[in-house]
Image (cartoon, rainbow, N blue to C red; front, top):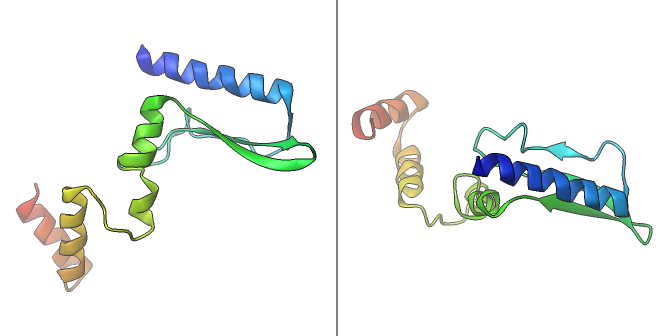
Length: 112
């Protein structure tokens, strides 16, 4: 139920933003109804503020935590040292494996 309330609140805020500012057509992205494979959820829209485009991201506290610190964290995709030990382990294993098949064998043996 909490997730449904979070989603409802996000859509409510989106409606308020679009009611107050002019949305730019075809810029709305709904990752709440259609999360990315990594679990990322957010509503993205671009509005005009004083004639200038401004991208808005709307998400709940739980969605924000996942986006900033969880499996959907941006730093994970930018090559920075992750603060998630399990991810560092996978990265190290991947770097040491001679092939994709060798990597999968190591994962199956050590992680599953």
